[in-house]
Length: 551
Ligand code: G6Q
Image 1: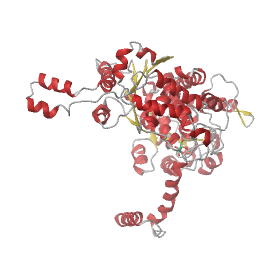
Image 2: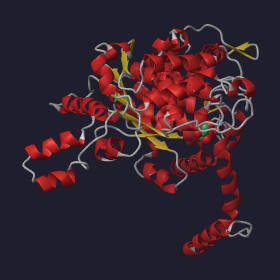
Image 3: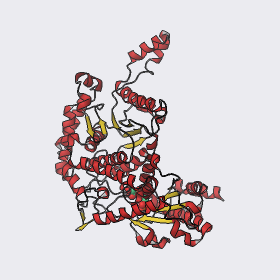
Image 4: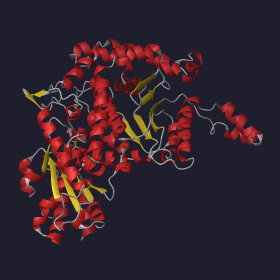
């Protein structure tokens, strides 16, 4: 645990202290702590740049906070941050540096991997992104028949899809006039068909995004799109309508895309951390390179904040420690992220991958099976929609669900009272979660509403809320490119800190391999070219049933 050897880890003082302390905190009411300390909100808030994070509605007191900071210290967090920023190979299972921070390193100070400064290459590709995105936007890079390319299709999956999709949607208000963006990720033919049906090949640009360029979904989708294009405009059109983003030039060439039309990135960038690289090409085309750069600026500002601020005033560190607090000392197994901004609709899906693929691990950095819980389940959705779905459980479920509420003070669409109603709702949610409603209060309300004694007795418990449920409120002025960069980098670093505390490699994803391997075995069996014996009886029966149904 914590980068110590096992013997030391078993004696972790900070962990034991927190375990003991958590028992005392179980019955402590946040409301009482607010009553006793008028400065609580101020004390447990961090302002940075245009962002305020209020974490005062958490089940913590000064001791908790100090003990959690002690845990970070014991985990040698400061050194681990430095190791990441200086290009050490902290992804130990793949023997790779972890340098998404280099992609937005606005200081341009050298960062070395294997003795080579990575910044010149990063800057060269950024220059290429700038040039190409501007050429497409200005209609200088034209399609085969001379028409402007206005339909931009990103073909990719996982890290080569979720980040660009989330950010492109988040910045929709900044899309260039006439530009439309589409995303094809799922191998389900419907994903391809539904996008292609809407498009005109003459005005369509495909960006095939794949770090490895071996991913079956992306290659199959790209092949289908390529055929659709070639059927309409002939083989020469490929050079005008297809570009690739990859670390693997050989596979790109093999696929039939000229490597002159390829944007490189590097093995030190993990898929789910890659939207700052050429994987974000669609973002740059949609919102313009200046905005893309502003997104990098915002992320860089958060990087610097993370690297240099003391832990108690460090947003990603504090958010991570609070997550660990509930996850490991309260046994809470989930965490909700609820942005109150329609444009951030895909943020929870993006964070699901970021957090759960990074930290859903059971073997630690010392090659030992962990004895504690790692990643919580992340879920969420845009408010107020989700208030009418899973919030029932958040308010009255048997266990509590820590929530992050993300609020832009100003909407991109200030129409009538819409945004004020939205804001009133989010503030009401966090207050309601904390305050709850006692059975007595519920009974009084029912009485005031004219209910009979029997009705009151029957309903009062159903209408009560336990309260004391924690949340963080993250307020920004407006969701622009800079703020989005800050927000996403904040979550990246939060995820990293959790991984440090749990002493796991947050940068591999071996857990996605097994299913892929088995799908390759099942495919010929479904197609009938191989026998389906050799499976358990359930899988075999399902294969046989599907074959029968498809006949
Ligand atoms: C992300 C993961 C994974 C990856 C996809 C697509 O961190 O590595 O989600 O992004 O499997 O991989 P390719 O980009 O290689 O196609």
